[in-house]
Structure formats: structure tokens, C-alpha cells
Length: 193
Image (cartoon, rainbow, N blue to C red):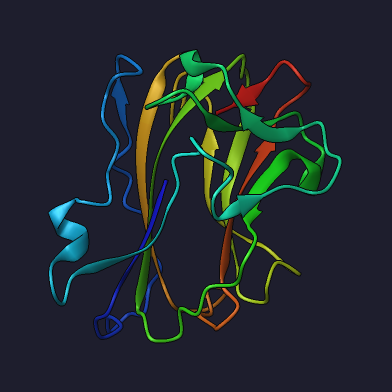
């Protein structure tokens, strides 16, 4: 999971946008963006803020204490690389989420880009999960992108996603920025890794 930022003037429209380049990949061996990705290191382009693969720990992420609906999972079948992943399930609000523990100062940036791979298991019908952003340290969350099964992805396979959003309206880039992934499925058997 990579959180990147770009320094550039805000567009004249100031519009937030989602880059809907989700692609399906066929195996867990498919690579995800690494810290050595040249596009993250190019001057004047994208700069990496966080990188997490969940191998050694949750890294920059955490969960609500004592939740059973979000955890660091060791079933390598659902990890896009390595053996570990973050898992969210059910629809218990904050308890069904993983989120940045620390605040990130994103005041100097015009765009945020979140890149990640996921494996949805058991989602059906109109079940979904969300990528959300908080400008006030996690007190309130705004939906950046809703991922709906059979529209944005298929269950039981890996999917890569990249979402870009700009500072405007609900997306205020502050010194207390955080991102969160929240599941909104039916039960404990509906999971996103």
C-alpha cells in the first residue's frame, strides 16, 4: 500500500478526481508498487509518504482496539506479495476498518494518490468497501472512492487500484491527514485483504 503526494498548482476547476485504472491481476505473485518505483522518486512528480506491506507489522496502520472485524492476517493466499495482509470484514463501521495511526502533514500538496492491491473474498450483490480520507486526525471521514463488487472489482481475485484526489471541498489537506479502508459487507465471511 503506497500513499503518494504531488506538488503542483491546483487545477483551475479545483476538481477532485478518481483515476479509475483498476486492473485485475491473476495471481498473488503479481508485483505491487515498491518503494523503488521511479515515478515516486522523480523530482516535481510524486513523492512517497508511506509504504506498507504488512510483513513485519501493521506499519503505519492500526485498528480499533479489540475489534474482531479488522486485523493483520497471515494467510498468504490473500496477500498480494509476501505472507501478510490487512483484513477488513463485515459492516461494523470503524471496527471494520484499518486506518493511519499517525497524522500526516499534507498541507503543501495539491494531490494525494493511494495505490494498493486487494483481494475481496465472498462479497456479492451490492456489497462494497471504501477508501476514506480524514482532514482532522480521524474524527470525521469523507469517502474518496466506493468499491462495489461486480462494478469495480470481482470477488475471489486480486485487483490493483490507484486513486488520485485533489485538495478541494471535503478534501482539505491539513497537518492531520489520514486515510482509512472500511468494509461495508453483510457478515464476517465477507472480507477484503
